[in-house]
Length: 471
Ligand code: FAD
Image 1: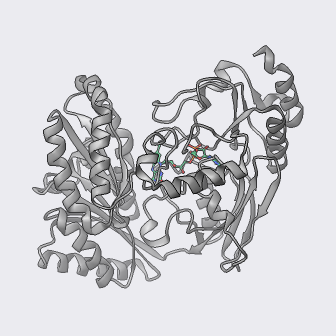
Image 2: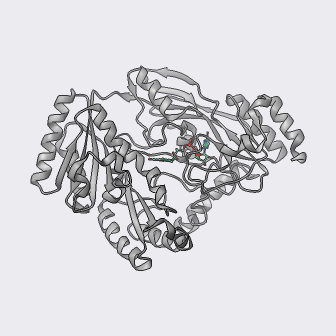
Image 3: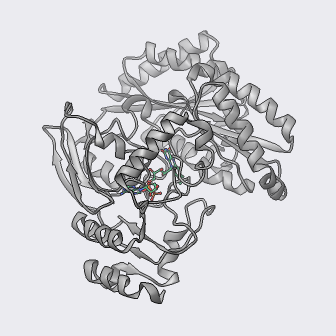
């Protein structure tokens, strides 16, 4: 650490000594990822307050050839925000950059610092009578910068799109320390390459996003949710189309959940009655949002469900009769990612498929996995309305965890080969990070990879921005 003494002192001068963490205790929460799968080391964790401080730190790192790992809420699931183990990098955490800069209600936009926690952005919009629709289970901890870095999705992509669709402008500190101010609230702007789109989803490898201008939407007057048991997996797909056709209200969320995943949270599902024993083993949690009053929306939902019964698509349904009940239903879905960890080591897959291929993929992959190693079980849930499944595998009992570990690679390979056989993608919304980096060259065409490498090399020729991630 002695060799970095002068560098650390310079960082302290730039942002204040108390915002430069160098002790193991202070650095520790920033060096391991949420899933505890990835750990690294760093010279220091730097916590700047604003864009100018980020620019000053990046300029210093550039001059001293110090590697930078951008970090927001550290909830990413691919190890993208975790430094490498060498200990020769700095983590730049945006967590102190938490200002809402402007709410422009006439333009329906919010401009904010990249370190604003997603739920705070939602609350700021709500307090102005508007909706910021990005919503995911980590929303109490993840940041806008991390959401942009990963092009986050979540449960309302079906209606509002992912983070890229919700973003009009961004501000970035480039690898050379310049500030690119692209905070434009324009819905039309055809002035050359879309640099904003290049940075969204770049996982901290091309610069540090310091601010963003995001779209706001009218606040729905009512939301109604229902948990329905589907007759079989094919019916889920038919039900999406039916839901879109037969309701004036917008279908905002459509989540497929296996009953095995539901049963991981017995406390939360104990009042759901027979639905958790549905013979098909599958339920769908859906939500309609509407500008109409709640009783009107409820009538529409009931009509839709009754037609779905008549068409033999669903076998049972629970309708949330209050806002609290609706929250309870959604807390079941949101509790699954954490609850599955109690099954021991898990092999996770964040995949997307054309929705027309989902049921064939599920059936065929399950049978191939059983042949590979019968001692595992699938835990499947996800945003099936946009073709995104969290297709996870756990051992039949936790004491088989280490055996699962030895098979991790062959399981991944089998699942991902199946995904590509069914025209899908092996990373739907979590990104590449460290987790999928080695596999990327086998999943992208040589031309795409070469273009990505050329872009990275042009913007960050010294490879100081988050090396070892994505490429
Ligand atoms: P971090 O984890 O800190 O960073 C993620 C990546 O972005 C890293 O590569 C990092 O270097 C980069 N980065 C961070 N900040 C910046 C910045 N300012 N500029 C440039 N790059 C930056 N994701 C979904 O998409 N949908 C879901 O439904 C979903 N559900 C989740 C549920 C749980 C329980 C958990 C733990 C995670 C879930 N995630 C989901 C994953 C995660 O929450 C998202 O990827 C989120 O966008 C990460 O934000 P973060 O601030 O925590 O980023």
